[in-house]
Amino acid sequence: MTHTYGGHAMPASTQRNYPFSAIVGQEDMKLALSLISVQPAIGGVLIYGERGTAKTTAVRALPALLGGETRVIELPLNASEDRVVGTLQLGTLMKSGEREFVPGLMAEANGHILYVDEINLLEDSIVDLLLDAAATGVCRVEREGMSLRYPAKFVLIGTMNPEEGTLRPQLLDRFGLSVKVSGSLNKEERLTLIRRHTAFENDPEAFVREWQEQENLLAQRIQKAAKLYADVFVPDDIIEFATGLCVEFEVDGYRGDITMMRTARAAAALEGRTEVTEEDVLLAARFVLPHRLKKLPFEDMGMTDKMLEKAATALHKEPEPEQVAVAGPVALVVEADEPADDGGADVAKKG
Image (cartoon, rainbow, N blue to C red):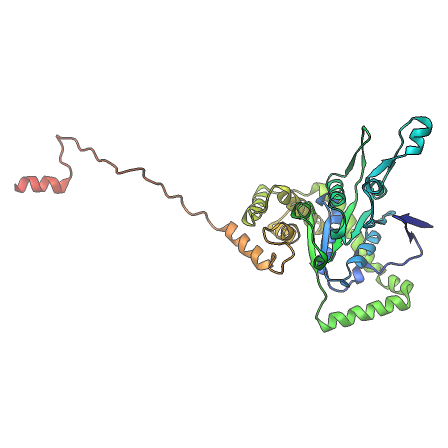
């Protein structure tokens, strides 16, 4: 059986994808994808970095961890707005006078993964539509006096190479998470990567079987976390801490605060806990804040663990006592029939 997406046929069962858990390194990318799999309402993840760093490999390996018939729906860069959200069937309208709406790729992606490679080269208006649906789980369509909504609950993943152009800050802010990837300069990691890829190319079936136990364990962890998410509680002091971080880093609007809470809850659920800790918030901040900084988000001087640690320390410091300003000189009124003080009385006696 073959599925066709945007004109590209993709085998549904004959093609073997490289196992997610066999990817060498790229721990942040794997964690970000796991978090958004637990809670798609986080709003999409943007993976940026140089080519050949397993971005597409990781995305295509993700469905195996989500269970059911989850697929990756790939959105081509030349897709029109009608192809993405849907269109009116003009032939039916002309023949019968009835309006027939044909849903687009976002309807097809409902319950699946919607993947856009080189999302920075996609039209801004299309990116905006995708991000709105990813955050709300609903696609809203206005066509020829017709207004409708249909479910579009999908995991949105975009990948890009910043050297080929970036996204406008307004669109960046609408991505829930971002993660930077780069090639490893560690010799042992590179050797492991080459050995695994060689083994996969030589015998994909045997390689997948070898990693099946690890895949099953990770799949169970993600699926349990998704069920546990609704029961995860956020104490008030943790909400205050998360909001404080957003203030420290001068994040505009409230989308960052809300996404931080969702991501921290997903992080706690992945660990099998029902209460969010500061560590969960700090972990979430690594993915939620970098692309929302005032600086250019893809500069090397973006967010670092030291910056987060410094901000967290500042939030834990006792606030300085407020200085009470005095409006003017204070007049001391002394009653005429009483001495001003002991010293004044002594002087009067000596005189």
